[in-house]
Length: 211
Image 1 (cartoon, rainbow, N blue to C red):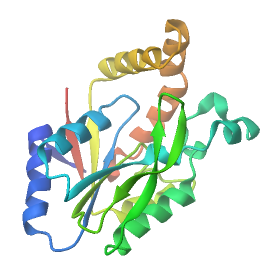
Image 2: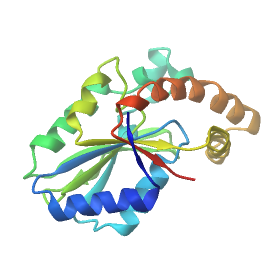
Image 3: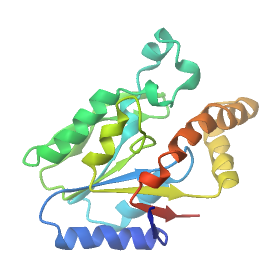
Image 4: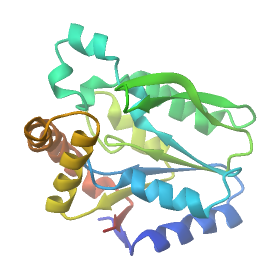
């Protein structure tokens, strides 16, 4: 069973401890249901930590393109485990772990255009802690199952479901969906994915409760 990390400050203290004591690069996975607050936690941590030694790598950069999703007839469930380039993402995580003396570039997902942009992010050779943020780092199928073994720690973000769904609806509206479509997506596709993510909860090392 996962241990509890009592909020953002406890998560921050744990990374600070890694920075002080670890001699090798540390990979920490932050996992959570859609709208759980993964990015909120990551932003809090990055605001407090030295950016030359810590970086965040979001899994979202490995979304398949909208064209590919349409061709595969998966566009209506974008965000599901099989709507990502799993092999490409796993290859990146392996490189981050093994290639520590060179810069490693990776794609970033741009919500404004709903597409990924290549080589927008970089893990430099100075980076000591890499926070890998994503939904399926603890998933047990479809190629994702190898991911957890590549991480030094995995953290599951925990938040009230009603609050989480409300955030999701607001996010979808902010990025262009009308209120009814936003509600339908949040309670439909997003909740199907949320149940898959919850399945990996007991594989996490820590649960981080945030508001």
